[in-house]
Length: 107
Image 1 (cartoon, rainbow, N blue to C red):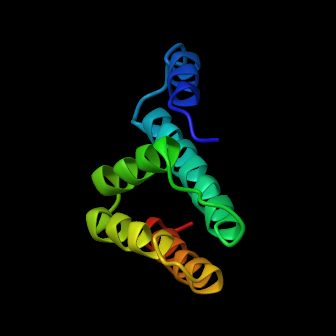
Image 2: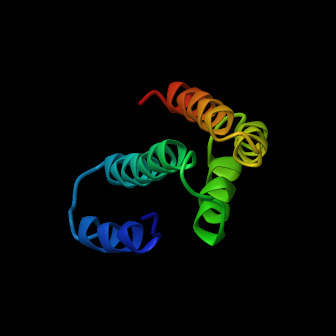
């Protein structure tokens, strides 16, 4: 699932590389965004069968709100989608929001 540990581990490994530019930070950000998108994809697919809300989802949505353009609005939309009572409507709405997030980050 989504963890900040992978970010710190990779940051330590890339810290020893001596090249100019901010490419190592870009790699870390892409890796972290990729982990967020993977988590959200999985949650959107599984929300038809189980409640995927919880601490991990809150952490991911906080990351989205703080680090992605229009993230606050998208995090609120996903929270709203996941709160719907009809499973198929919940899944459809969640998948649409995750796709919007994916388009914004360019993945």
